[in-house]
Image (cartoon, rainbow, N blue to C red; front, side, top):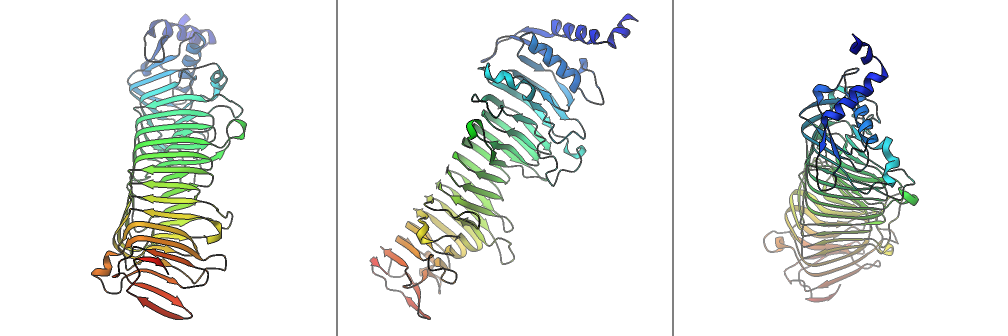
Length: 490
């Protein structure tokens, strides 16, 4: 009877938690942490309003107050709304499932450090989260398809805006499924490492980076889904310390069904062995740099692959596989836009080195628009192969600068320099050196290049086979040449 009365008092909570700590704490060492461990058992947690959040948070808070920074979640399903964890903690969940409470709020994150942010300034160890299955339970969260719950991350990492010191964190061997927001949401002032994780049907992304002064390293990530392709998303909209928008991101061994979205407002991105099985793919680097190597990208007939504001973007030894038809919404393999109505890009560089472009019934393999020769933007294609059926290999719509070297472009017309929309500022500065169209030998009506002579255009052709056909436009006339000097200007 006395126990029943105590359980309804605050004192009972203290005694209960203290007793759990006494019997559940033990000495345990790992690479970062050596203090006591709090073992958490779902069987010992009380449900309130259908979830374990309140009891579990009390345990965590009391453990932290006694100097414990390691937490072992025993096997079982823990239903939570939002659990606050301290920076520097070691949180292990062998066979533990963390499931989102039904109809949680928009800014409810399953694991977050929000209420312990002040500790970031004094902690040197990383927060480690490992061996969990996170179930976002999106079928029981309400409407989210229009981003109503986009902030409902499963793991949310951030430091205060004015914090010079970054929150250090490691997430490894975790699986995320059916989330209405992000799997791992990275906000500002964070130094994060992610290893061997998987995300399935997560609405906004497996790893999403939205704030500056942040460093992220990801190795071995799979993201897929039959309802949502999941993908990865770098879109920095908020500054970190000292109003800094810069991020430093490296991703290796990535497999996504689609939605590979990298927008470098400031900073740098390096990708190695990126494998994107489908669209959409968005690449942007307005004031940053992107280097992607040894990677594979595919696009179906209804998908989009867009490169926007390529201040310094390089692809090395990558393969692009494109499919299209006359009914496709997007009729190009990659749509390159050097600027738009809101921003006129200048002195930008987009480079493809030793890349292969596979086309299946494609109107245009590469399409470049919103450019002018005077803007000094530069497309470079070196040692590449364009293989398959395309009307045009490279189509320049509005003017610009381009060098193509040691490249084979299989298409009805390898290079087309459009003159219909080119303004007095547009014009072309194009050099082809040892460039060929394999169709010239086997398909009638195939051309290496079509362009308008004069009108301020500078077209230089070097080491071009005499079998190649050149079609030019001048004063309303069309001229076709099949004999071109091996080296010279046209």
